[in-house]
Image 1 (cartoon, rainbow, N blue to C red):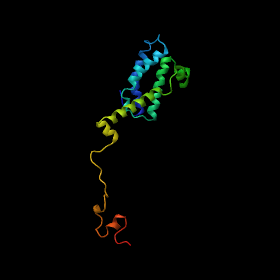
Image 2 (tube, rainbow, N blue to C red):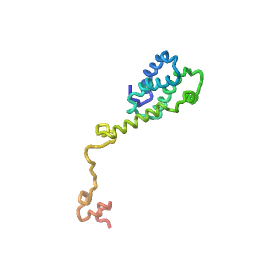
Image 3 (cartoon, helix red, strand yellow):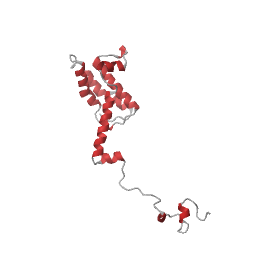
Image 4 (cartoon, one colour):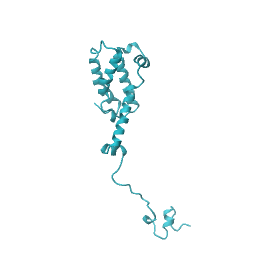
Length: 165
């Protein structure tokens, strides 16, 4: 499980949680909708978003995550694609905000970033992009000028050629 970079990885990662969801439909056949949604979030979405703190989210990934979320909600409601219901009608029936799973992933990414920033370690160094050595500056003063001699240094360092009037 884990690392989403491109769209086809997302499809592969979503196969296992969706199979688990199909197996658990018999388990919650007599329960109410709120219990089913809580169970879906606790068991299925938790498996599907394992390691989401390190995922790279782009538009394609967001689209697949939203599609997976709505596919699970349709499974809970026992709605098939032939019924042609809109995503908004499903979310309104369940009283769920739009892109709930994507918002949870973004929240977890932000919390992980805060955790990394508070601690000293390799992850912090990588995220900040720090180098071990200090960066040298080419022009640190008139004494470091190597292009010209002392008599014409002021002309050379200003960008003019020596001897130009």
